[in-house]
Image 1 (cartoon, helix red, strand yellow):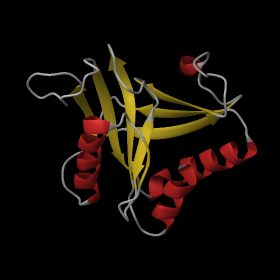
Image 2 (spheres, helix red, strand yellow):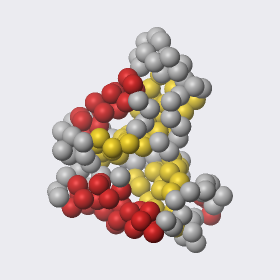
Image 3 (cartoon, rainbow, N blue to C red):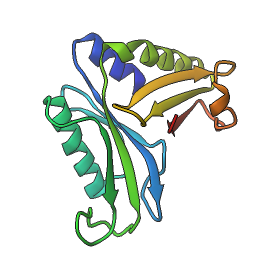
Length: 161
């Protein structure tokens, strides 16, 4: 996914990264689940499937078209007003970030670390303005994020820092 996002940016596009930053109750995917909508309309990954996935894809499509604003959207996954109509019954907060050339160094670093199998931390900052991404490998993690890395090649963390 990181390599595809970087390639799209190098080709002049602005892919949209969608990331579950919080979920409450029963939800199909937890924090860190991510999906990217590429400029050619291809969709990689998942933020939950079903109606919430279609709603996230629609929001990402608006951003690709230069409409709407980046940020975090709250989706209710049960019945009622403003709900996705899913049977889960919980909620999911999904961050939407249109990536550009400024994000290329982080994406290239992430792609390299994943290819090498090096544990890393992908941090999505979602407070104060538009979301932003950072990538850290062992030894680079800021003290405020220490201890939040999970086993595996890459942990995706929605940080409120």
